[in-house]
Image 1 (cartoon, rainbow, N blue to C red):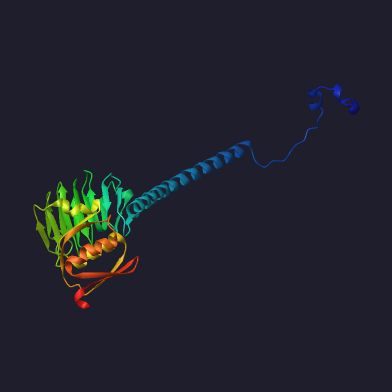
Image 2: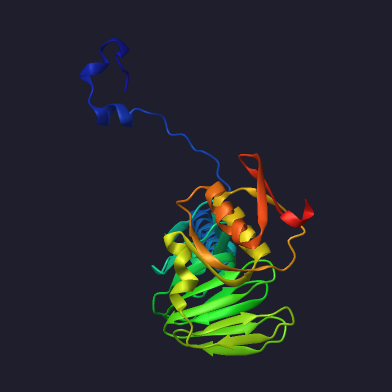
Length: 290
C-alpha cells in the first residue's frame, strides 16, 4: 500500500498497523526458559526473605533482653537523696506515702523506681518515721539496721550513737557488728554501744525522744559535749569547747529562744561561760580556767 504521508489522518489504525514491515528480532532463549528464570529468581528472593527472618528472631530477642536488663539495672541503681541542712527541719513522703521528718543535718537515700520490690533506705542523722503498712521496710545505717512492717518510731544515728525508740507497732533492731538483734514494742528504747552490743530499756517516756519535732530539746544526764553539739546543729553555728570534761546536763530549751539566751541558760547552772566571736562562732569554757 502506498501511503499519502501528507494525509495520514484518512487511514485507520488497522491500516497503519498492517502497513508496517515484518521485522524479526534475534533472541537466544525460548519462552519456557524465560519463565523458568523468572520463577527461579522469585524462589531465591523468597529463600532470602526466610533467611533474613530467621536471623531477625535471635537478634530481636537479644535486643529485648538487653533492653530489659538495662531498664532493671537503671531502676535498681537510680538513687534519690534527701538532705536536711544544719539549722533546719524537713518533712517529706516516700513513694508508699510513708512520712519521714528529718532533724537538722540528716540525710536519707533510697531507690524510687525499685521501691515496689524493696523498701530500703540508707540513713544518717535523726528522724521520725511513720511507715505505711506493706512489705518489710529496712533502714540501714553505719552501726545497725532497723526493720519494720507498719509502725512509727524515732531513730538517732550520729557519730557513734545508734538509738531507736518505738511508738507504735514493733521494730526490729540489729547490730551490724555483732549481728545481735532485739524486737521493740511501744515505749521501748534500744541503743547500740561501741562494742556493737544492744542495750534495751522498756517503759520509757517516749514523747521526750521526739520533742525535737516541736523544736523542744530535752536532755537527761546527757554529756555536755552532746548538748552543745545539738545546739550547733539547730542554730547552724560553731561552738569551740574548751576543757569541759564529762559534765552531765539535765534540762530543755526551745529553738524559738536566741542562741545567746540558750547558751546562758545551759552554761550558768554548770559554772560555764561563753563568749561570742561572731554571729556563727562561740567559745564555751569553764570559769576555773580563768
